[in-house]
Structures are given as C-alpha cells and as structure tokens.
Image (cartoon, rainbow, N blue to C red):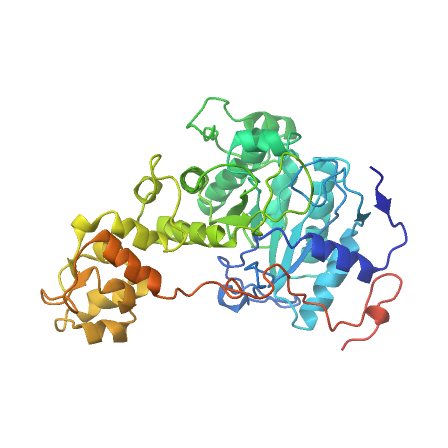
Length: 483
C-alpha cells in the first residue's frame, strides 16, 4: 500500500499525529528517581513531584508522550503504524523534540518526556536520533526533568548505553507474552533482540550502582561481550547473565547515573491466545531475571483488519487488563507467586472478583485468621487488607487487642475481610466458610474499578494540548511569546 508522507508539515500537525500515535504505549510510569534542580539548569525529577493523569481507558498521559516518528520498516499486524498501513507519516527532529519539551514544561503542562518511536530506516538510525534528542535536552537546554525513553530492539549496544546515561527510565517492549505470538503477529521482530537490550540495561544498572569502573572498551569487544548465551535459562529463553557491560562509550558529564529509575516493559493482552497463567508467569520471570520495575499490560485495541487478529465484539479486554494489574501487584508487594494465583488446570482469573479474593476462596482451609496474632505476611494474604493496613495492624496491636471497629479506622476493607478474619477469636457475625456463599456475597459488593470502566467513552485518550495556540511558533519551531 502507498504511504502518505507530508514533507512540509507544521510542528502542530506533527504533534497531533505523533502524540495520537503514542497513546497505545502505556509503559510511561514516572516513579523511581529523585533529582533536585541544579544551578543554571531547568526542571527537576523529584519522584513525588511527577503528576499522573489517566485517560478514561486507564493509560498514563502525565508526560509529554510522543513518538519520534510513526514511520516504520516493520509490519507488525496489531500496530497502527505498521508499514502496510496507508496513514499520514510524520517525524520530529531532535531540535523539535527539545523545543516542545521545554515549552510545555515552562507552562507546567508536563513534568517530563516520554519518547518512543517507530523504526525509521533501521534500529541504529532511529536509536541515534532519539539519543541525540536526549543529549541535546540535557547538555544544550540543561533540562534536568524526568525522561523515559524506549530502547529500540536490534540497535547497537553502544547506542543503548549512551541513551541510558541521559534517560531516567528506559523500556523495551516485550510486545506479546510468548515467542510464538511474536512470530505470528510480528515476524520481523525476534525475542532475542528484545531481551538483549533488557539484559544490557539490567547489568549496566548493577555496575553503575555498584560503583565499579571497568574503563572504556572497544565497540567490537563490547558487542561481542553482549552476545548473550543462547542456552535456555528457562522456558521463556531468557538469556544468561554476563558482565561487565558498561564502557562502550565515554560517560557524559553530570551525575544522573545509568537509567536510575530502572526499566519496564509492556505486553499486549488479548491479541494472542495466551491465558492469564502464561502471562503472569512470563511477568514473574521478567521481574526475577531482569529486575524490572514494572510490567505493563495493554488491552489489545483493534486498529487493523487482519485474519491473524482476533475480533473484539465487546471492545478491548479492559477488565482482564485490570485483573492482571491486580495480580501483578500481588507478585511485587504481597509475596505471592504466579503458581499460587493460577495453575494449568485453572489458567484464568475470575473477572468478577479480584485475584486475592479468588486465591482466598480456593484456600479456605487457611481461614479465618486471627488478626491479633497473625504475622505480617499472613495479614497481607487476607482480602481487604493492604500493605499499609497490615503495617498499621502490626503496630497498633502492640498496645491493645484490635476490634472490628478498630480495623475499619485503620483502613481495612471490612466488606471483604470480614469473611476471612476473627478478632479475639470471634467473627464479625456468624459466617459459614463455604466457597459459593462467600463468592456470591463478594460479587454483590460493588468493586471500585478504574475510572470509566463501568460506562461512558472508554477508549478516548485525554489531550494535554487542547488549549495550546501554536500559531505563535515560528518556522523554526521556537515559541516567539510565552503565555
């Protein structure tokens, strides 16, 4: 198919195209780094100062989230920007990226930049453009705010490393949960090319945090060193660790560190037939093998017509995405393992109740739990008790035995917890510990779902730029008058 390319396009038009094209990428968390402003610089990256704004479909749009380009040499069947699509194509220059970031930041519209891209010409060409934009922001514009940048699979390790010195967080999209799914829907991409930069970022962070100095090595030696073993480390073919990896490029001046906020990844949910058990098992492996900060789950949105893609008469599987996020939270903060939450014989979550309740109903032999005696980790497994409320319980019961009214004040969600706990040996009221009864009671309790999930327009991304007048941008893209 033909591709529509606009050679003389205003910066406003590019922004409309490339911010809209970036809305399907949800891996833009902005936590995990704390850096104050510097004399002569602009901005800071204090973790608590990054504001998150979520659109109706749950996607984070707190940063200036754009693509460097929506031109792409790949033809991934699920992607709006696939090479075969007849769409308007646009590309930012590094200078335009800097101009937009600085002008929006000065107006307090954004707290930082999230930069992703299609693959223009080659992975190396695209990664170099993105790296140049970040380098210019840091060294020319002295921007000290938060930057999240995507690593392009297949790019040279030296470019990945250089970008890592300028970015706060980097991410490499896993795209699909399994290698089979990737082969079917994105045959131009390989699992090995995706996992290699992931491992490089992990090992580079470990070296930087360990304050080790290996000196500068030749690019050839570095690339050879990063050819990770093809031996299977598990069923997902995660590469075996090797080190050191830093030293391919000269470290830039400044004290930001190497990817100080860590790395994340994203999986598309619902485009391929994997069950929930396979998905959370992959996520667990990624956390363990690559020390990821977050795994993001993006409900598949049908933007292309292709026989290889599923039909979605009910729209994107947003509730399934929500349950996977809840399960992911249990893996990261509650001490659960994927094999506890699901199994091959029970491979999918019950979408009517949250994963912790689902687990508790399958393990009623462990309940009820006496809250005045249970240890912290046991408390975490009780539905309705979160990390903060469990900590408060452990602290408060040192002074006196807790009652149900005390638990409510502490923050325990009693409408869930009352079926699984006792206070001083007594339940809140007589309850039969029977799975069907408790399940019916829990289903009747209205769960707090993400905004917009119960109705309304679920699929519209909010815009940061509706009220911006771009007419005062001159031809070079520089704002001639501040608002």
